Length: 321
Figure 1 (spheres, rainbow, N blue to C red):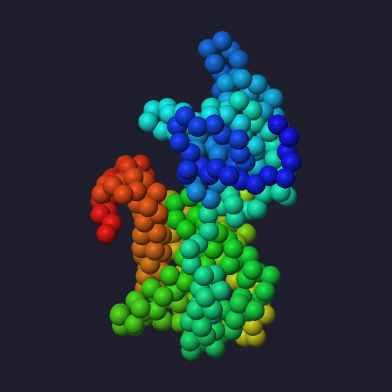
Figure 2 (figure 1 turned 45 degrees about the vertical axis):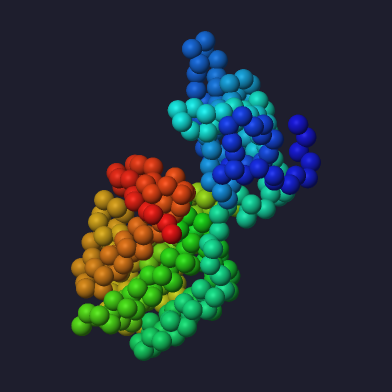
């Protein structure tokens, strides 16, 4: 099986039991196991922009495991079968595929919304801030062209919500719009502080993830996490602004530090201001609704009930018109 210039023809979400497969996928997981006779088999997870499919290679597993790389591209030859009511590719051959020949947008899902329109809307909203220091801080981020190119492309998560190219921008804009509405509903809320926190709460995710052909954590993402990296990025930009008030800096960074809500979910601190409490729940609303909606659309499409959601421990009812 030669690795010549290759055009992808079959996507994971289109595979059907009984058909042959000879195509390229991103490899998101691989694990060697032992058969009863002591020889190895290889379990794989193959993905592209339409979803993922499990695969198993019963023969020549040690050779394949040594050659193919998690996070890379792999050319698969085999056939599709059903196992425990799920599709599975039985692999006859698996070879590494040159990553430079694979368009990332073929293998990674992408936001359905217009990137430039979303970005312009977020910038416009940020310019509505009245606080000169917070406004200058957001401008320092938006005027960093290299950083913003990454911001426009980055996913917001590896799996649960907004896990696609442009997902971070989509999530950030949605939270900023919600924050603007909520700040006007409750009295005594610092609208500018809440809005700045919404824009910057996940800024560290630009560096937390790598997303060439699969979405995964960078080394810094695993070792430090997006909250710490985000605080560092904010500190760097604040240093460019003359006489940034110390208390305002502390309150903004508290929003970022506490937006996960609980220490067990990764927040170094719990929310201790009204703006921090609001930001946490706004983040919960936007991430949960997006994750549930994506799940509804990808599990039992056309049926009124979804498959069982193991994390949220329920089926969802969704009768689409």
